Amino acid sequence: MKSTVRWMSMWMALVVAGLCLVPARAAAVDADAETGAWGGIKVERRTFPVRLSDGHVYNLVGYLYYQGSLKNKPVQILVHGITYNHNYWDLPEVNRQDYSYARYMARQHYAVLALDLLGTGESDKPDGDFLDLSESASSLHQVVQRLKATAARNTFETILYVGHSNGALTITYAQAYYRDAQAVVLTGWLNTYHPLPVGDDVFGPLLAQGPYVQVPPELRTALFYSPRNADPAVIARDNAEADFVPRGQLVDLFTLLKNPEPIPAEKINVPIMVQLGEFDAVAPAAYAAQEARAYPRSPYVFVDKVDDVGHAVNGHRNRLRSWAMIALWLRLVGC
Image 1: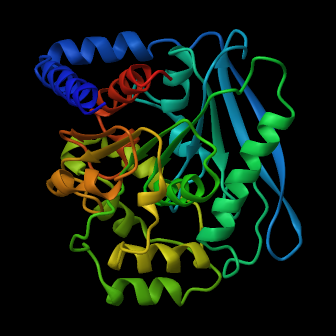
Image 2: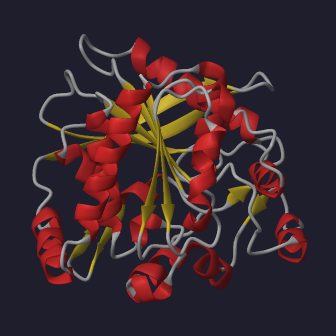
């Protein structure tokens, strides 16, 4: 097993090197070809009733993207970070460039379910202080159960988790305790201790807003983007469409950013891909070398560093490098 993992790691390293050597002009042509038309992508709105620890049932909304039939397709369940909803995975076209991870992966023959976590988007809004990390992980598990229970034959048999930032943290807890997925992809998250770009002087006023928190545009830009590597129009639109954040989620997020030791990453026993951006202010790729140690029970951990992107990977010009590597890695581990 160790020799197999070593071979896979070497092979992925060669692929990464090859992708990084693509000339800028050629990369731009490839991006145009890939994003020029999304014909044939079906999009369905799905609603999942979930029961939380307060005994109440809430509706969690997701959007399912796929081409052709759903049969025999692995399903990627996408979980967004704070200030986002499912639209993080389906950002609109800007200046003739497409920013939709969900539609890209549908073209790679996956079913893709992008969720609005409770408290965001079109999903129900429980009390923001009640809606913490454990409730979100439980609701995610119930979505998977519901998806499988209502599935037609030969559909939704292979579950893949893909999470960004706080969504990656939520997935880590869900997979550690419920073990629903066959592979896990985490972007913009580190379980390795590292200095934070902001402190209590910023966190405090945010938490004082109330049960639902709005992060100011200037703070979002500073934390989420590398401005020289993103279209200003994308950043402006992203800030204009930012969602509110349940305070319970924010408290847990801040606590675990300061001290990641309680995160149960060591319980995950499926293949894991961690993807970190070169200019990510929240989860910098400079700490990538230590991250694989956080997952001792995983049979294969691949830590990928993406050049020229900040925290919100999907909103940067080099997003296709990120997406292509995720698709390649999933195929490599049999998904």
